Length: 244
Image (cartoon, rainbow, N blue to C red; front, side, top):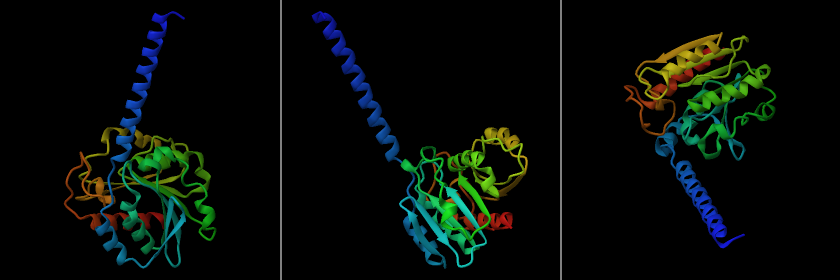
């Protein structure tokens, strides 16, 4: 190899290496920025709860009522810390629903679509099981359900929609979103409704996208005219009725 060719090769390798480093740094910055749980509000909410919070494994947290009537596996929204949904899970458990939240790698459910696997087996006494998620978590858990539809009794979407096609099945689906939701893509939501043949919709008056968790305001969302606690409690009331 001539000296000129070596210089060109070294230049190409250096450029590729620099680009890879830049991509790695950019990804690191992207994954490090996410919505944190408002711990004081979360803790205050949990203080009033009478349920047991237990760790199934390092990324699955269960909220267990005394006599559970159903099971609920939940995927968090994209780039939202799982702890922000502890109040939602605890309120479900207060209503007799054993609820398990799956913490996601980098707070993105796309990296653990199969996160629900193995949870049902931990609680064999429960016969009815539902899957659910918020925003991106809802879409991802719907993808999981599409391949495991025989194992579940329904799907619950919070500020979300399903690109998975259930139009040929009788799976029951509950869709809840806030009246002031500024994040959920309404055009895609309406387009993908055809995937759901057995759909129940519920709109929370004054609610928004971030109100299903306790992680503060979300960029692009509209302001809610009700509190997080009010939106969570109303959401769980609808979920409990749906599961019955």
